[in-house]
Image (cartoon, rainbow, N blue to C red):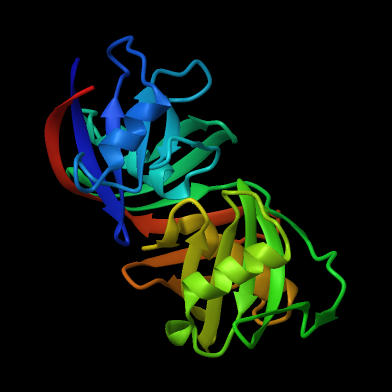
Amino acid sequence: MDIEFVKMQIGGSDGIYIDFTDRRAAFKPENAVRLCNRSFGIGADCVTIMRTSSRADVKMTAYRNDGSMIPLYADGILCIGKLFAEKKDSLPSNVSVETEYGVMHIHLSNEGKAVGDATVDLGNPSFRNDLSSVVDGGTVLTAAEQRFSAFDVSLGCRHRVLFCKDVASIDIDRICTELSGIEPTEADCRFVFTETVADNTFLARAWTKNVGELSADGTSACCINVAAAQTGRTARKNEIYTYFKNGTFKSHWTNSGNILLTATASEIYRGTVKI
């Protein structure tokens, strides 16, 4: 079966987007593995399928490059919002997206006939810090002869936020492999390393077992916001800017408890592929 796709990115984190809103077609997780392969497929971090929804404007199902499902894919939600809106004759200001995690609401900043920045309400994060040794507002973890102050935040999956002094220089693969061995974590747990560089401004790197280091990650940016506020590094009401190697996110943890993520999605190219 030949299908059309759009390749998009936020901060260098790329994805393949397939629109099945006008057709009934099956998509198997193993197709995501093949399509995401950078040598023999299109090449991407994930594949996201758009379908019709009875609960929202559109429904999305996202798969990692290993075929596993992503319950809350913030970058993908923003890309889906842009794709859905730009199909319309008149650009809407708001789009709702049904995910495995619930219905998410996006506000779009439209620039002429295209979508500019978009903000998604990702709901309420949860957090816990129940490990044994707690200092500096976090749990002390040691790996690769370095000590980190860590704080766990859950937003779709667990994010272990680790505060450090020089995030660019850390051996992220070695450290995360050691940390995974000290305390077994789920495959989709994100290790998020971050450094404060100015008021309300952070540098960051994120890593997962099934992918390795991520180019950028919206939910990780949100979890840095929560962890920084809970450990006294920022005020909760502030907008936080998080800089990954290839992209920037703005997040705001509101007084109501919801976390808002803002970023700009862009289209790379369109094509047709056989599955």
